[in-house]
Length: 179
Image (cartoon, rainbow, N blue to C red; front, side, top):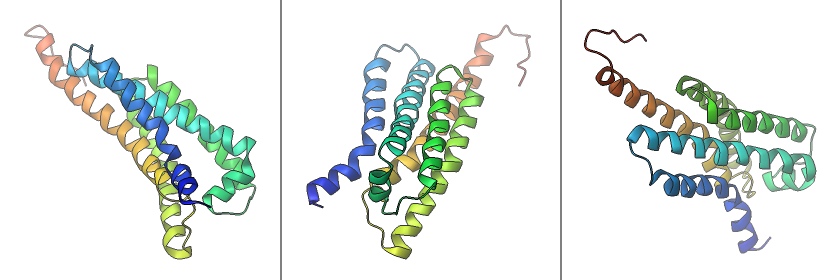
């Protein structure tokens, strides 16, 4: 494998988070409040990064399973099929997050984190214990596995805090805030 090919395969997973960031930056320029800006960032991250990133992995593991297994540094096993459907679950959660409440977005981030952070541990173990330097085991995939859920959780929690700060100011003087 050439250095250029290795670099391309290692960096390819970073395309969807880059698209999410560019889309959110462009769209959020028209936002009037910090909360509106956070909402835009959450939607772009949910759809472009988690949703389409995971859908891409689903389709890749279903249509080119031998290549995907080789890219990760493993032999093809029945688990390739299972990884495809785990990613389909992540894609559905990412698309669902667009219309979800902030609390549900935190839950979606945590759900995605359980699979992706577990995968991160597995990738790191394979890297250090077995010297697996395959492009699908290191680099961009590790960045995505850590960032997809972490950013979802961070943005939703930040929006919750901003919403809580704004809520008392918008209520009549004697009305209590229910939580």
